[in-house]
Image 1 (tube, helix red, strand yellow):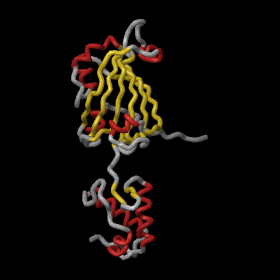
Image 2 (cartoon, rainbow, N blue to C red; image 1 turned 180 degrees about the vertical axis):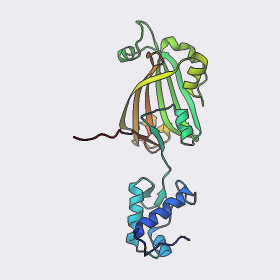
Image 3 (cartoon, rainbow, N blue to C red; image 1 turned 120 degrees about the vertical axis):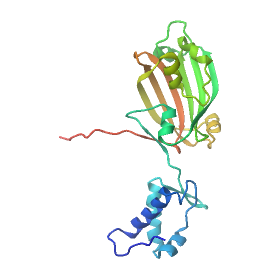
Image 4 (tube, helix red, strand yellow; image 1 turned 135 degrees about the horizontal axis):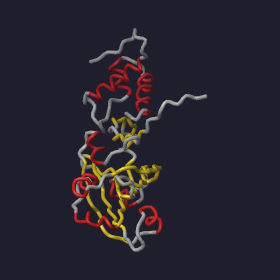
Length: 246
């Protein structure tokens, strides 16, 4: 057992935090596993419950642990991280986060476009849109509900089986279409009944709403996407350049 060093300049609560973090890193404490109580930590390391409480409280604030009323404190599953400065396909995102990507197509049909779809996708006068609706999974857990809309002239993709498949990989390898620039907007929302059911979460659970327009290598609109993303599974980061203030 690793002991706390009472002679160290590092506070005891910080030492306990490091022990817990190391146990998580080494797999001694696993995601969703209940950790010892304040009293158990206090007896094990011969420190006050107040010291233990401070260590656990900071780990909760940092998103490492979660307290469940009447049940105890548990290790949180590490969220998948996406860098907004260089976004990738869902498949590559999963692979980078060491998750197995998957998906299930719920709808793949031709529809009459709305006026804003015509403008966004640059449709011809009578051109329809292709609507692809699917659930994306990571390690077989549903994490994202996608609604993707393509210009109707790309109807040849409707012959493809997009279950457990990378859409961008098919577009590149079979049709020579590459994704280029995109415009993305992310906001906070709560899961509606159908969304909650498909994502296997409670109605009203916090989610992220991502709306994106993606252009191809020739800067023509390729698709627009509206995704509902589980807030407990994803985290987005956006690096900033160093700015010197006057």
